[in-house]
Figure 1: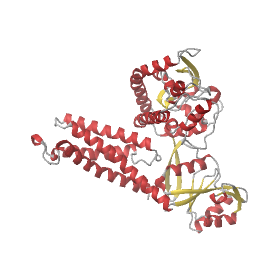
Figure 2: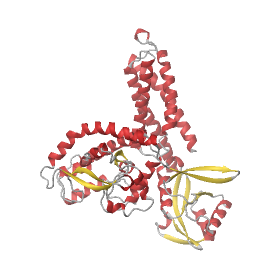
Figure 3: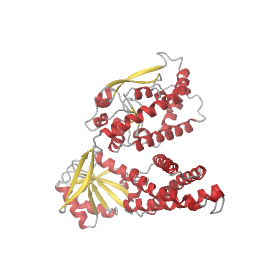
Figure 4: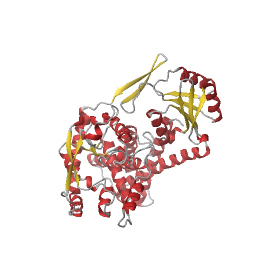
Length: 479
């Protein structure tokens, strides 16, 4: 199924459910009747229903709420749908107030709850249908030509986008006169295949499409492979060169039959800086007031620590400017932490003092996590792009489970994705996803007794379960 068609079907299902949810909300409020007390018939809610249908269509298109466009990630879907439904209900209430129409707030509360549950179930149902197609093998089998970061990212993207109905079955790496292949049938080992034998290999593996991700796709062997694939009915797709991951927004143009890829730089603007500053100041101040008791409890728990209750760590901020990042005085590298200190770290309570850095303008609530100058000096040009924005207390990498144990390259991959599509909606959604992540850690920590060193390491490993298997440890950095 084409992605555009899938989005239309999900939107249509949302609109149908909106109508059903309004009817159910009315029945829950007034009973199984079309006429409530004081003449409040269901027809009185028709303007609200029409407004909800139109507004949801706009919200759906603007915020990409189908659940698949940025990859299937349930916490992201829950947080985004929750925010969108809350915004919808607030607009409906405001509209009714301005129109001086009486609207039962309980009915709207039922309506909002039903909308949220129904929208989540619609997307989960679609995901289940797509999953069944993978089980029965009704998907396109794909081979990726290349072994660089773009090839690895392509495989990761295909895995996170089940709506593509594609399955990566192997990799081909071009040599001068042959290809190294990695197929499941050879247990992941590399096998050298002559160019003339590649088509036979692809045919044996029932490959439907080849995706070329090489930095030099014009090599004779690669061009020969593409020509032979097309003759055999195997689809050929090409990632254009030069393309660097998440540094630009591509746009495909067709100029008289000649395909042209235009790369737009993902530069910030005054509007983005203004709303982000306003969000950081207002929400940061509120969160600081709410978290003061938690910070105080955490500080009291560590009152016996040498060196004070708080500590400062030198970090690189926006454009590489150095600043002192605040946190509770808990050693991340210590392997034998007491249980209470382990809990403080895993719930990121040790990082709450950084709200002060947010109010000082050195950090943002959402953004790439700041790293030490020693680590930043080893950045590649690609990784340095993450220094173009203020560092944050949380970010896209953190809600996917990446912390100080993971490499800067892995975190930069998520951070640059975030920087390509900044919006207040995304920032608030990531804050909600962070809460989801912390709740998940809290549930895993339940029943934790005082661990010894091995138990502490095991607990940390379990908490990081489900993150990218390719991530590797490097020197420590901020969580």
